[in-house]
Length: 255
Image (cartoon, rainbow, N blue to C red):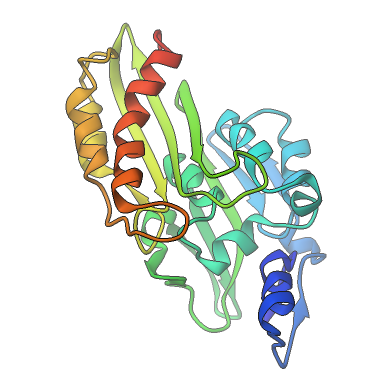
């Protein structure tokens, strides 16, 4: 088992006594620790800790800046990595919804070479992905330019240092009071992190007002297949989805 950060495995070891027979730490491999900014893309090494990513990006991706303070504690962010977060494939991880909203892709590497997979196509089921045996996540690509209006709504029993019941990430371009493009990433409402294509389609061309986004808000509330569990009921999750867009318009009336 390849390990980068080991924040998830540490919990499994502590609570369930998990002890993989073979563990290889890859978080210090130079090939997985790069960060570059070009005119049309930001590439982030999969083994950089979240604290390192936050520091080295220097505010270039505001949506990630909104996620970082709500991602566990600073101690966890000092060890947790983007590659590890996506590698475990949890449907309630906070980074995946934001990266989905950013139209990110993952660069997978193996002895056969590299391939690039859009994150929207990466997850195939509960904690499952297209990553083949022998492949590692090398980098995450975020295309530029970024949308002008971004936000991350995390609904949890405790806002900080807790797992999301629902996570909603927005990347919306509003021009002269009308939506020109929209991407919405969701966590906690399906077996995998997902986009909200119907809500996105209804947003494009809509006025950036409470009435203008009403149809998209209703579609967003119907997205996914939320379940009842110890964190929240399915009805509560749908209610939070339905409120997310009106809340964003209220918070950012000019887009």
